[in-house]
Amino acid sequence: MEGARRILPLTHCHAAAVRTAGYPVRPLQDADGRMAVLSVNLNKVAVLRNSRGGDLPDPIAAARVCLAEGCRGLTVHPRPDARHIRREDVLALSDLVAAHEGVELNIEGNPFAPARPGYPGLLELVRESRPAQCTLVPDGDGQLTSDHGFDLRRDAGRLRPLVAELRALGCRVSLFMDPGTTSLEPAADMGAHRVEIYTGPYAEAFAAGSGGGAALQACVATAEAARAAGLAVNAGHDLDQRNLGPLLAAIPWIAEVSIGHALIGEALYDGLATTVRRYLAITGG
Ligand SMILES: CC(=O)[C@@H](O)[C@H](O)COP(=O)(O)O
Ligand SMILES: NCC(=O)COP(=O)(O)O
Image (cartoon, rainbow, N blue to C red):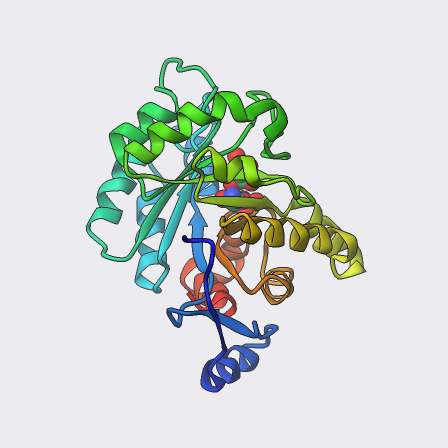
């Protein structure tokens, strides 16, 4: 069962390297000697490209930089209004990832959003691109960004057939969930493999100077409930170089963090390769 992962102490040399980099050392790593996978979300590269109507900056070129630094995950969140990532980006990233062993593509989206010109629907995008993982997110069309997870009491019935179809397509399925959610058995029961903890409230609390406080404990509670239900744990939204280390230290069994907005913004100042290296020094993988 993927959710049950043995955790081993961090190697001293790795701890020293990470500490030298000036980042909080994450105490643990998984039984494979790996730590949380960093999955770079490329949405914001596409925002910049679309703002001028041309082809630059190219999300695929940005993806190549991430992979060249050792990144093992890429994430995109194509939205029905095509405000950033488009179908052709998804297909091109699928081809790029297929040529890089050990690298995964994660496609996020609302499975209930209807298809429209330029947006074939999340399930159709998955059928065409066959990502390693699909993260289901209950975003409405008019949302500025993702800001809540599923209500499984309301949504479990209509999610179940979609999860079954994604599994039949060979996809690992992750459900975007609010921090503090502890009734996760329905997610496991419908066949989801993972949950992704929405870390926006934690990031906001961390930035306010509380170190995360109750918001961090809410993430821990959801992560513990996920593990108890046999679900692996991903995390994402508004994570950055300051709040990521404490989150990973509090939840050593996080399998993957998907990070985009802050990372791409920081890359504008320091360069994408340098920025990705800094995040990999924190996650270890
Ligand atoms: C699900 C989530 O929290 C983010 O992955 C989401 O992709 C952000 O979307 P935008 O980049 O459109 O704000
Ligand atoms: N699932 C979270 C993600 O992919 C990126 O979120 P953000 O770092 O852009 O807030």
